[in-house]
Length: 285
Image (cartoon, rainbow, N blue to C red):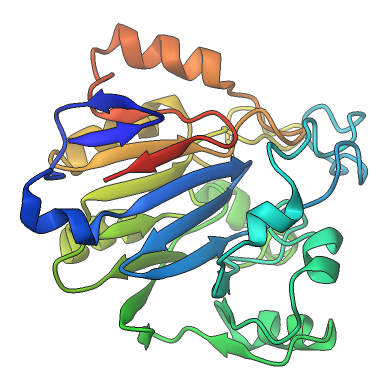
């Protein structure tokens, strides 16, 4: 059973037995790809984008680049977003996952987990004192963090070295601990063998997907993150998991809205498996 803002959703692997209550996983959708995860007694903030509405330009060479980002305000104050957070996870350093506002407002002694030494060097250069490269897996406060792979675009996009370098590498992260629901944050990736591998290896109870179907100009047939069909694919590839769809309605190059995804979910009769949270919404598993 999954509970989101007081509404129950059945059809997931989550349990509401008395023995699991103390190990409930809480996920709060903040905005865009920014999610706050209370996991086994530790609170993580993933991919913080904390700018005020219109705080930075649209992304050059992308769909609707004339719009300024973010498209919407945060649903709560930055202080409330950061309240109780004990560690940051940055899947990659694109501005909509790690913006200037986050760099300025997150305490510089906060542990920050990153995918590689390049990102670590960047974030250390911004003044952060405790930047940790996630290699394979590590444990923080009893929570196991496991790095997963992905690709921020199609094989055709990445066939060109210049485009590949511009997009750069990305990671996903799996959160696990004894007696807790396993949570898989896929990150900015299209559906890839690495995603199938993560699902098979970790058997997550909760899968958080970035499903905004972001588009580059001239490459409208090749989104650089997941979309509608990937959401459906997830329900088949992880038949016992709750699917949480995020990364919509907040930055210029997202071509899929929550409204459109909800309609697709209803049409395909997977509404009991898929949650599409509003900004600020809290889900408990």
